[in-house]
Image (cartoon, rainbow, N blue to C red):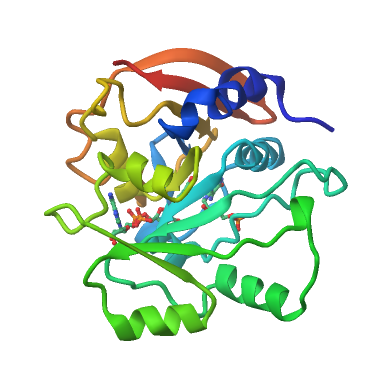
Length: 262
Ligand SMILES: NC(=O)c1ccc[n+]([C@@H]2O[C@H](COP(=O)([O-])OP(=O)(O)OC[C@H]3O[C@@H](n4cnc5c(N)ncnc54)[C@H](O)[C@@H]3O)[C@@H](O)[C@H]2O)c1
Ligand SMILES: Nc1nc(=O)c(N)c(NC[C@H](O)[C@H](O)[C@H](O)COP(=O)(O)O)[nH]1
């Protein structure tokens, strides 16, 4: 089994380009229903992706140095952010570095991604390749509570303090520099709604190019009705233009690859 050809062609070649060391590549990816929802009422997790597109998402993770989600996604979904669905006997496949955007350190110390890291470290396992377990890095504000930081570090996290935007968020505009300073050449941002919206509305980088390089969206043939939209209510104004790249049918789902129009 190998990575889907369309991902190799339209994503992997960009996330491993030589330029990414100085200009990290940012991919936004999510799964949505036909009525543009990414979760159910109150943020309840809904299975949108079929097995084929869920596997695709794990292949996509192997193509990025890091994977990023907002803290509310941790609270709601307790994700593992690993690559357990790709072939586990290929040592060249590595899971991405888990990153959590969490300005005020709301992340629960009981999060599964932390306990899995601690269990692996305690077991001194030499898990490599796809089974490698990476320490979660939590990106917070410079003045985030020290006691919360200590509790999360004791639970296994690395705390990365950064300057926050005046809105109290980690600024998408400065985020490529945060990535570069962390030695990360590419990141896939999996959500949730507020994080996706923040990056979709971000002003262009200093070099005039969009902050977001690639968008990979799984569209599932279902309606959710009441639920969490791709972007929060009201944030569907001023969304960027997209340039079509490719659409792939994967089982019941359609996976669309686009770039942001400069
Ligand atoms: N279907 C999918 O593909 C998918 C993927 C991920 C999450 N989800 C769903 O999304 C929901 C969570 O979305 P959400 O919007 O409530 O929370 P979120 O996961 O987007 O986290 C938002 C929090 O992240 C922090 N943050 C830091 N910098 C930020 C920035 N620049 N922009 C925005 N937030 C920033 C803030 O504390 C903010 O409260 C959950 O219900 C989850 O199930 C769905
Ligand atoms: N691609 C995708 N299809 C879905 O049907 C769905 N509900 C999500 N939701 C995102 C999910 O909540 C987390 O971001 C992780 O994808 C959790 O999965 P892991 O534990 O990391 O394997 N994502």
